Length: 210
Image (tube, rainbow, N blue to C red; front, side, top):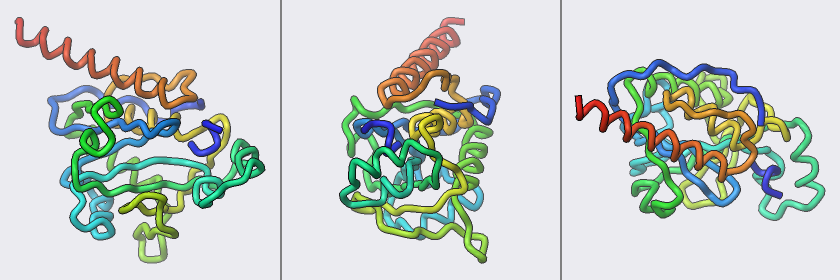
């Protein structure tokens, strides 16, 4: 069930465009999507995650329903329950190669973001992680992939706020102008990310021709 592991209201506004200072990657994993940042671009307390992913050059962040996502073999009943409001989870995956090399260029869209965008998306991602008494985020389980860890989150997963809605929200906070309206599936996320990338390319061409 595509929605069980992963549209709703976007809670944050797109930041104003500024000079490109870095980039984010939008990654498709079949029905699911992640947002990724170079490890060196993690800002503020989010940078503390690097200690849990030694040697990683990029970190991917994804949202999903906690019970369904963390089971090795979820049952059909787990899939149905995942559509009801319930605890979410954040999966963080550390990569030692760029996402396009790990997942194939056809499954990755890279978008330029401003300095403000990098700050804001780092702040957003840090807010998504539940904190321990020490104020830090600690994983509660190993993830399904080598170099991945599950973290608790205060966010609630439901059929109206899925993994793909969450990814679009994160991308919007970073700055690229993508719409979350009607987003349910990974293909929609990737289509909108590619449209944003095309818009960036046209803007650069227009600037060069001035």
